[in-house]
Length: 206
Picture 1 (cartoon, helix red, strand yellow):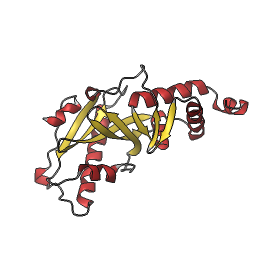
Picture 2 (picture 1 turned 180 degrees about the horizontal axis):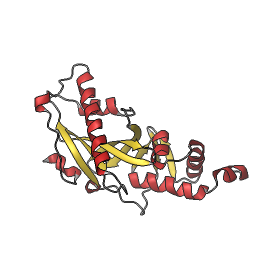
Picture 3 (picture 1 turned 120 degrees about the vertical axis):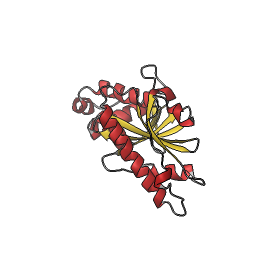
Picture 4 (picture 1 turned 45 degrees about the vertical axis):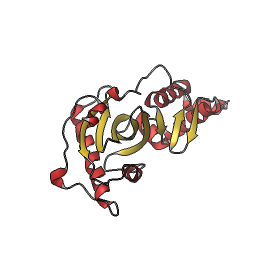
C-alpha cells in the first residue's frame, strides 16, 4: 500500500488510477510512459505512482514497449476497426518490407507528433502518436500492401481539420522513412496515392 505522504501528494489519486486503467484497457495495447502521460495530460510523478499502485494490485503490467492492462474493461470499447477513421493511405512499393518500416517508425517523434505506443487491433497493430498534450491521437498501420494514417473516432471534441493535418504530417514522415531505408525502393511521387477514405480502417482493403 502506498504511504500516507504519497496519497497526500497525489490528491485525488483514486481518480487518476481509474483514468490510467480505463485508458490502458480501452486503447488495448502497449503505451510508453511518456505517451501515456501526454495522452492523459498528467504530472509524471503522479502518473508514476499511479502505475506502481496498479502494478501492485495486479491490474497492469510493464512489458516491452510500455504498459498494458491485464484485462479489458467494459468502460471503453476501442478494439474494433470500425472505431478509427482512415484519412489517407499510400500503396507500398513492390518489395517493401512492412515490418522493417514499422520498426523504423516505432518510438520516434516527428515534428509536433510525440510517440505514444502500439495499439492492438483485430487487423493488426497500429502505431500511435499524440498530436497535443492531453489527447488527440493519430495512428499509422500497414495492411494489405498499403500504409494508412487514421484517427480514433472515439476521441471527444476532436478538431477534424487538426486531425487531418496531423495525419498528413505523419504520412509525410513515413514516406521519408521509406526513402531513407537502405536498399529500399521509395514510392515515386506519381505513384503515391493519398486520398480520403470512409470511416472504417477496413477501407485499406479496397
